[in-house]
Image (cartoon, rainbow, N blue to C red; front, side, top):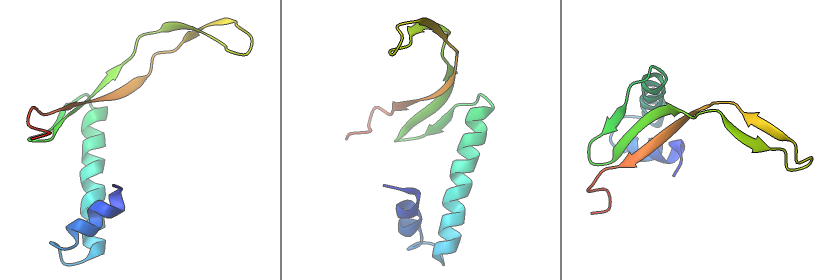
Length: 86
């Protein structure tokens, strides 16, 4: 399912597809802003999203075998709600 599919389904409730697409974009924009600010995004009955930073870790270049340090990076974790599959 894509953002367009969500907007298409939402357009059946709202007055136009353009309005539905704007609403979907705004929801995802607000979720992204919250995650970037370090807040947790919770959607009751679906799950929660939170951003975390990985630690620096050791790795190696597969071509040369040279050992390298992999820099920390930000990732998003999703945890499903208990009744997700019910």
